[in-house]
Length: 116
Length: 109
Image (cartoon, rainbow over all chains, first blue to last red; front, side, top):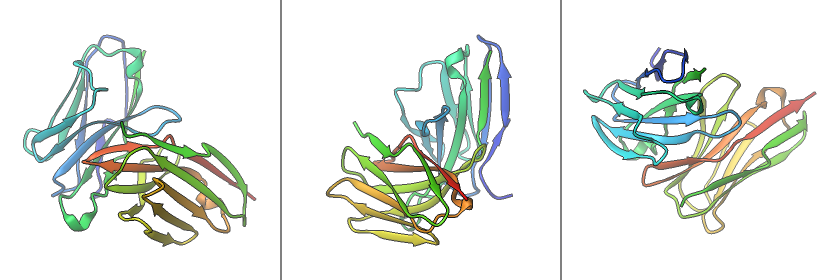
């Protein structure tokens, strides 16, 4: 499978716990994005990386959220001290850095987080 | 602030009918995208529109862009059940991607 892979697919946690999600982008895609999607809404941009550099962070990304892409390949999104309001689908997408590619983002299936 | 509005949010239509989904955005943008999402699945890219007057067609779907009006349309021709899904438009400005709330389309026999 050469698509964007996200793990785990589902995560149930108790309020106050820390969680970490992983995203493996399409091989050789330079850009990697994280989004959050709640029921009945479109994805909301959280942050994006170009190679290992985190170039943009949304105001939605509170101090409890941190993302890394240490080697410019896979990325992790960590949420510390989870709150019930963090319950959502977390989507990862990747795109190649190419003028011809039109910056089309390819999405993973997402990680559904439920905070009890 | 870049805002994207879609309408309608819910659309129920009969097979064989035509309909249009509208996407308005608030500021200039670099690119406009249409995505499809099936329940429990990820987003699938349908079209990317780059310039004023751009028109793209794939099967029963046709997307167009009017940058002066800041409006994109997704036209559905002779709908079939397989088109039932949620359709999102998204606008990209300086790599800041904003999505509309989505249009949940149901095509009934």
